[in-house]
Image (cartoon, rainbow, N blue to C red; front, side):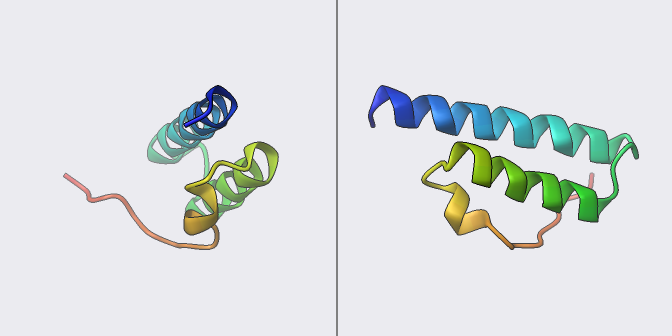
Length: 62
């Protein structure tokens, strides 16, 4: 993996993680999370991002 690709992936995953935490804390709705996740895909264009675009999944609840 090229350094630029790795940087894009890290920025995407970190942004997604932060948005998921905001959703868990009820500061974002699930729909807002999905919209912001897709915006991260548009901004950083990570390789894995195109596979996740438009997918609506929930993380397991404890």
